[in-house]
Structure formats: C-alpha cells, structure tokens
Image (cartoon, rainbow, N blue to C red; front, side):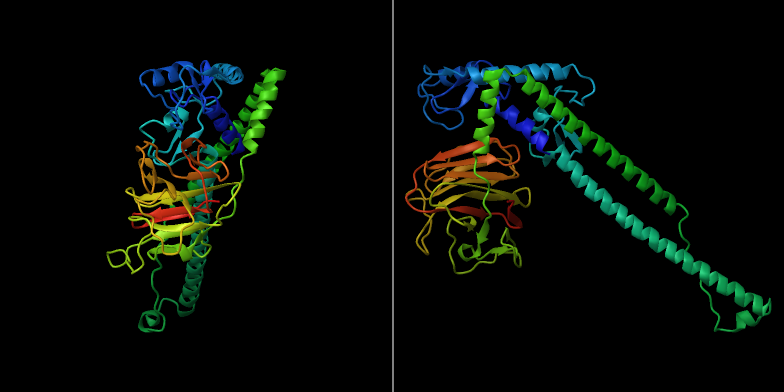
Length: 433
C-alpha cells in the first residue's frame, strides 16, 4: 500500500544507519551521508584512517558539517511519534511500542520496524500488512470456491439418491409385498454412501469464518489508510515555510530516480544448464539424473551458472530488480558485467569487468572478478540494482525496504549489462519488473 511505503521511506530518510534510531544532532560527511554526531564520532575516533560506514570512502572526522534541515525534519517526526504513543486506538507492538507495519509469514505475526530486523524474524519471509492481507484474501476466496463446488456436488448426489428412492417406492407399491422383488435379478438396489450430516454445518461455519476474516482485514486496512492520511496532514501542517520547501525538495529528489526499464534474460548468452520461462523473465537451475546437466561450453564465471540481461546500458541511468528463489542453502549473484569478446572467460587476474552482490539466504557479499569484500549480515528476498553509467556508480539496495546495501564506484569504457548467476540446484532467478 502506498501509504505504508511512504511512511517507511520517510523513517529511513531520518534514521541513523549506525544506531538505526531517529537522527540526533545529524551531521553530513564529505561523501554526502548523514549520521548522528555521537555515532559517527565513535566510529571514526578509534581508527587512524576513518571511512564512511556506508560507502567506505575516506572521511575527515574534523570536517563533519551539521545538517540543520535534516535535524529540523527529524525533530518533527520525533514529535509525531511521541504524540502517536499517547493514542490507545492504534495497534502497537507490546514490546517496542512501535506501530505494526509488517507481517511475518512463517510465524503469522504482525511486526513493527524493530521486530522485523530482530534475530527472531530476520531470516523469515516478511511482507507489508496490506500485501499479506491481499494474499490471504485470495487464499480464502479460493477455499470458499472449492467448498462451494463440493456443496453443489453433495446437493446433486442428494437429489439423485432421493430420485432413486422414489423409483424404489414406486416399484414396491406395484409389486406389493410378494417374494417377486427378491427373485427378480433385474431389480437390484445398493445402499448409497450416506452423506455426513455435519458437512453442511462445517461449510456454513467456514463461510462465517471467511466473512469474519475478510471484515477484520478490511477494517485494518481502512484504519491504516485513515491513520496515514491523518499523520501526513498533521506532519505537513506542522512545517513552517522553510521546512516545507525542504520537504518538497526531498520529494523532488526522490522522484528523479529512473523508473525500471522492461528487461528480459538473454538466453543466447546463458550457461547451458539454465532453463528459461517462455517470457524470458525466469531462469532455473535443475538436476538431471542426480547431477547437473554439463556440456562442453565452459562457465563464464565459475562456479556460477550465469546469464546476461537485456537491454544493456552505454549512457544515462538504469534500475532493475530481481528475486532469487530456492532451497535454504541457495546461493546466487546479481550485478553488472562489461561487454566481453565472444567466448571470453571472466578471470580473477583480468581487470575489473564484473561488479556483483553474492546473495545467500542468510547474508550477502560484494564481489568483483578480482576481489571480494567482507560478508554483510543482511538477508535479502528481492535485490535492486541502480547504475549511473556516466558517474560510474553501481548501487545495490533492498528492493523491499529501499535500504542501501553497497555501492561500487568505477568508470566504464564500454557498454555494461545486467548479470545474474545461480550456484545451487533447484533455484531460480525471477525478474520482478
């Protein structure tokens, strides 16, 4: 739902990446990132060559500049949160006193922002509440349709049995009570399978539960929509003229991000073990007779089975998103590769031509064909990639929360293409846009 995405994005803009709390005395570094003054001082004081915790670029700890505009915005949002805490009508997390925005599919629980990032739910499938409500609505409606079909079959069988009984009674009346009925093999009757008397009651109860669940979900969505509108109105009314200008500028900067371009997987560039969907939006790695289907064509980036995306990029900016699905031990890569000569293999000794994120079910790791970075304890279900060809920026982010993951900074001298790979059998790559 657009309202929850707006709230989540707003909180991220005023959240310190180090302590993950609303910014206090925010300062901006030379590389353009914002932190709490106390947090960034603690991070940089303990090292002789301080680096930005987000982009790893060198920073001058004596050159931090106060960000008064962001401080004002953070103070107002903090004031909004304090006012919200006094309301008893809004459902909140009993442990962290935060609003519920997410739903854990595995545990069947509503989560706040803090619960979502806790160790209890970090590796679980987590979605926004309105998305979960829509999914459950579809499942419930499907079950009701199935129950309705079974109900119709039962009514039909019941009518057939009643018809057979009427025929039986008619024959019995004609023949009387004589022993002709039992000697004549032409008239042989079988007892029909009895219909459970409780089945109709169970169907009725299931329908009532379905209606109750749908009504509860609708009420929750309506409450969240109303709450978001009230919060937005309160927030905008609290801004003075200068803060309102800053807010509009922030909204404009967010709207300048490029939209995702239609993309497909280039099967002509693919590893022979990959199998593609008809629309070329999905690639899967299967097992054939207990082993991978190996052919003479060597892998371009061992041990991954890779494929390029299309179209490529030779100027401007582009963005795409992808899901990696499979068993718990699944491993894949998502990234960008420079155009290579036909048959050219990506070697570790070659100059950098591959910039990617190695993604598993429990963490991720920034890698190139000639180096790798430290593992990041982040569980991703949907990865976003943003490329600014002219600036040489390759940015990876969580496409569910829009949270920044890692940025490569380089320069391009030839076209680049989206690049995807799978290492684990029975896993898949799915282009989500």
